[in-house]
Image 1 (cartoon, helix red, strand yellow):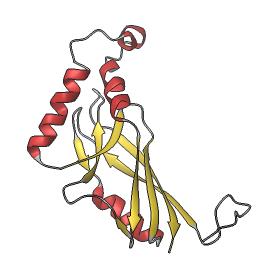
Image 2: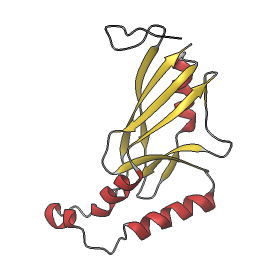
Image 3: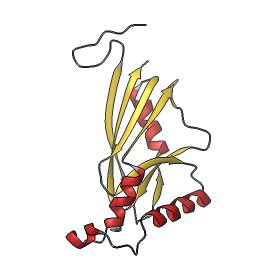
Image 4: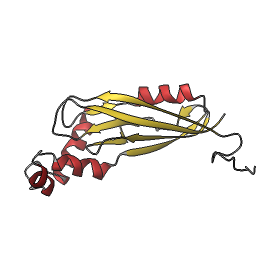
Length: 154
C-alpha cells in the first residue's frame, strides 16, 4: 500500500499519541518495572499496529528491557558497577563536586530511550522481557519523567 504524506508529517491513516508519566525511585541501583504503565499508554492510544517510543528526560537514568528477576537484576547492577566503578576518578565530580560522575556514565552506556513494536494493540516483548527504568543517580529519591510516543494505525 502506498501512503501519501499529510502536511502534519504523518501518513494518511496513521496516528500519533503522546503522553508522559512519572516514576519515583528510592536510590542508586533501583531497577523499576514500568511495563504496566507502558501497557496502559498503549491501551489509551487506541493504536493497534506501530511502535511505542519511550524517552526518560534525565541524564542519570536509563531505559532498557530485561528479565525482571532478582538474579539478573543483581547481575546488571554488578556489570554497571564494573563499567563505571564507584572508586574511579570522574572529571565530572572534580568540576561539579556532586559525586555523580559514575551516574552519568552508567546512564549513557544503557541509553535514555527505547522503541518497541506493537501488534494487535500489544507490546511485542518476549516472554521474559520487561521494560525497566534504571536509576543511576547517587542522589536518592528522584522523580523521573518518561515521554511515551505511540505511532501507527488501527
